Image (cartoon, rainbow, N blue to C red; front, top):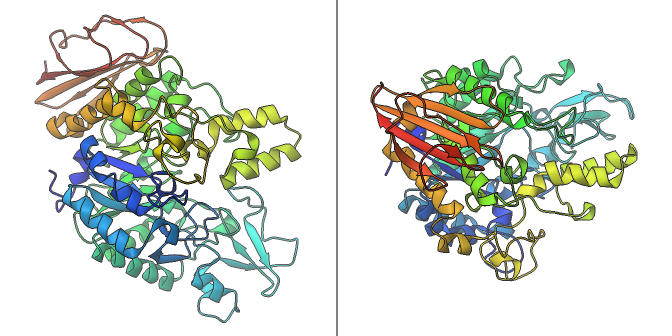
Length: 541
């Protein structure tokens, strides 16, 4: 078991992300909850993860599924009570699993008491907790657009002012230039640390130093000043893990976020690789270039080595399912799910497994009227206004919508996939009878047990944590091959990321290497569709 009082313990760890609303419903109301998570802690322990990242469980009107917080110190009632949360923290800790909470520090709900006070007048002390600009109806301060569509400014007639919202209208941005805002947030974080929380994922933390008058929403001039203050004030314990979500981060910026001295955060959660199949807009998909993906991973692996620390992920609550996106969710669903996992988990960084990824869950074939996600619903409306055919809009939603990751967890082949005894809040993917935890647990060759072995390897072979990365065959259109090396150990990761057989010759020094893990039996030679294997030898040649 990892010693979680020591700085850097997360470098050997694997985390599991839970989207509480869709994980498991314990009381039949159709909404996942904390008691449901409690009932599956042994499942997570069997998988071998060291921590769970909970998407927000705080009080919220749920305009953005909990990323619009109305009270940081209360639990949303459908999820349970504070006593349930305390029990989850304690029971998880007994199993060596840390609870990592998802904190939204860039904005609140418009139903948060701070914002309600802010609306009472310009002289109210809470007014300056948010970002306001004077203006007239129909004439916003500038033409900035919100990420979820429409203007980033909302007019309040009683104040003759606009407030800034980078996301939904119901998510007003906090004013981090106000030291009282920062102090309030630090006190709130200590409230959760005192209850036993062992880390935090910091939602869009690269946006807190925004300067909207200059149209700057990410990486503002004061960003690192604020993050260093946040770290010193709220995260002084060396064992607390802090994960900074930063869509804007490049490798140089990431070395500041995650510097080995711990002055800012434990690791960065960046998205450069995730955007490589995106066209002009998020909803426009272009074919993924494997050489381009490899060069992206190579740059992050080499430029952060010894200088910073990265997160490793392909799935999360904001992304489509990777087995549908970059794998083959038909004939080779199992093989491609394992291949993608081996490709990722062989690298340097801390892996994150999103709920259902470990059984190879896929995108859901929803209809246009079945989407729940605010961003997707807005896209459908906007593209209809612009004259897009419904067929094209549906294709974009099915490929890119965040709802792909939010269908209920598929536990078994019973009604509603075992997620709820009631009516689920969101449609269950129709393939749940074939793709579910029960079937995976009964099949020793399932995706689940492949993930279980990968997770165990990170704890037994230090080269996964410390090895230097070298990319091989950079221009190959199908093979993703790389080595990881320390003075004591060498790994070779070989992934055929295609549905065709491919010839492959072992590089020098690996002719007699042991196979640590593979998704096909037999030896390396002709690589079968979506074949992956990780080979091991001791020492450099």
